[in-house]
Amino acid sequence: MTDKEKLSVTVDHDVVEAARAAVSAGRSGSVSAWVNNALHRQLAHERRLQALDRFIAEYEAENGVITDEDIAEAERSVRAGAIVVRGKRSHGAA
Image (cartoon, rainbow, N blue to C red; front, side, top):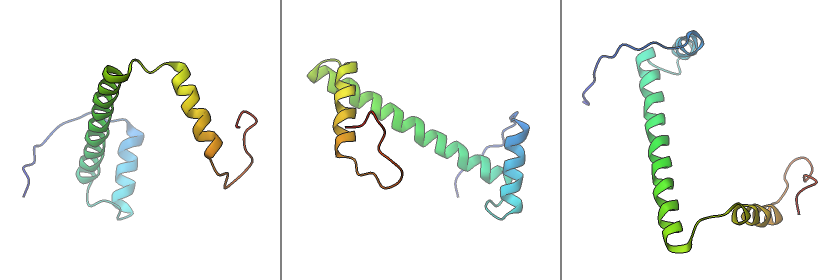
């Protein structure tokens, strides 16, 4: 069993209501479990952002700073290879 720590926090009313609704609908065992899962997702998100920061720093150290033009070129390249599955291709797309 993992260690748990009791915590007192102030949360926006609509978020508390969403947590209670999740419990009522059987999507979560408790409000605490719902909040704990949300905190786990936030932690995972922050770790991915930190890994991305490290990757970009290493890439730029080896290849130079990524410019706005580099980003625009990558976007053009991705759009050119995209397959439209719904709707219409935007006017700006290649």
